[in-house]
Image (cartoon, rainbow, N blue to C red; front, top):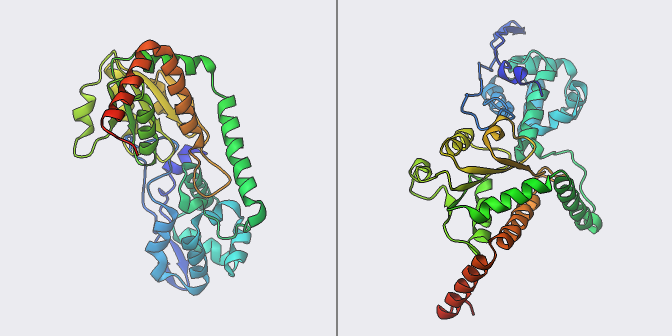
Length: 323
């Protein structure tokens, strides 16, 4: 994806005439902030927001296209302008006027923006209204095959030396900080739950009611930070990595192929495939990889890890924790 196209996507000052009316472009200048979570993310203005802003002034022929896009914005990523017009039940000329009205030079620019949103992982753009309905008798098998494909592709690209070094870091660290936002937060929570079985001082961030800075101030050179950042990372994510690196911690960055410059400050970057053939991302690989790291870190801690696990089980019995 050409990042300059995305940066300058809405810079053009187009004025278009249709039926004697002067139509000003709806798109304005929208550049990604330097604090954006990933250079792989699209510009801030979405295609559907531009369509909504123009909707009331659209003639009937163009409103058909607007309705199609609002129902499933990702549709335009896989079609030509002619195909999209046919799908909407309108003409190619109407489609050309429609996308210029939104501020695009041509249909290709709009399609690039939709594809960028798909790559970014927006479920709205991954949902395809025209997708063929699956066969219920074979869907479960197809789904399992897809999950296995993602796991195999991801693990085949990992360097065993990085996995071993990362597990050793988790085992020897004074403290382990596990950080994740949005969908990455529950993956980070799973990592913490694994690690606390065999070692003390494992902290999940962010915590409710506290700023991240209040906790990151405690990160030091003898610590390990496990950062989970699968696609659709929050604004400022890169600054979190930089802050941890500047404070001397070793950083394990668990991410997906859309990671770019923010991985430069990480000690180890482990890339997991999350994009599947289905609507929502698959988190089977990051969960499985974290379990693998926990197993190996437990082995490296040795007797101390076993004693920690024993202490937990004794307290479970004492507290009658389980039925």
